[in-house]
Amino acid sequence: MNSLDALRRLAAAQARDRVLAAGVAASLAWLALAGLFALIGSDSSSDGALGWAVWLVGLLLPLALIWLAVWSARALLALRAEAAELRETLARMQGQEGAPPTAAIPAAPRAEPARTVTARRAAVPAPPPRAASDNRQATLELDSPPAAELTGPELFYALNFPDGPEDREAIRCLRLALSDPGMARLIRAAQDVVTLLAGHGVYMDELAIPQTDPLLWRRFAEGTRGEAVAGLAVIADDAALHTAGAMLREDEVFRDVAHHFLRHFDRLLNRKAQDSDPQLLAALAETRSGRAFTLLAQVTGMLGRDGAEDPEADTEPRPEA
Image (tube, rainbow, N blue to C red; front, side, top):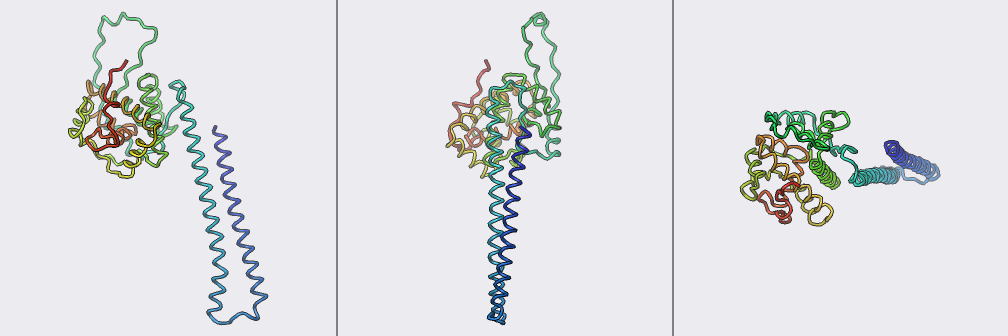
């Protein structure tokens, strides 16, 4: 796939070069034609300043039109190349729906500044000491051992997605998360939501998320909805809110994916609220997945604002099977 992408980029670059060469050729042809006219009509041309001004405008205006057409054609080719890459990304994402958990590593559409990510990861509280296992359970033997519970930092890395192939720690944590079926469903749903929003110009890294009270996130995770947790509705980007609301109303596929994601992220918060520091819940809301959740929860009215539709039937925490 990498070689195919390289060939496509090379073809697009060659097409833009051909447009540029055509513009240069058209400009040279016009200058030669104008010079020929100037030689033929030099005896009858006006010697006044007005005559020179008319002649100069007549010379430069076609050149301006030629290069305006060249610029428009090159911009159109670039847009078509970007659209083709986006369609390829979406097709690859849809084709990986049934792949095993470790088959693909989702990446964020845009990389976040390293300082911001480092600060947020540092804010994730260390996991509490785990209690010793019950001796009665030590004798149980299962065919396949359950996936290990992720620590707070590991969960943060996984939900924030790797910044690229060099982000080895995030990739390791993401693989750990994908080894758990429940977390794998959440990760894939978050990837779908973030990718579809990015396809409409809404990027999680560009959403300004002011710091919120961690206790509000604990209340929300325990089931509180409406005005009691309205302090969590902190996204003020009207364009992002409008776009997300329009997608929820008009795009059935996105609506199903969004409600699926909201349910799974809500269940995660509900589980973590039982035995975690509220600061961890607030830190998880700062991840790319958490930002998508806050955006959709605010649009749907879960945070006490008038939303696009009533989400209560689809987003209440449900016991895991």
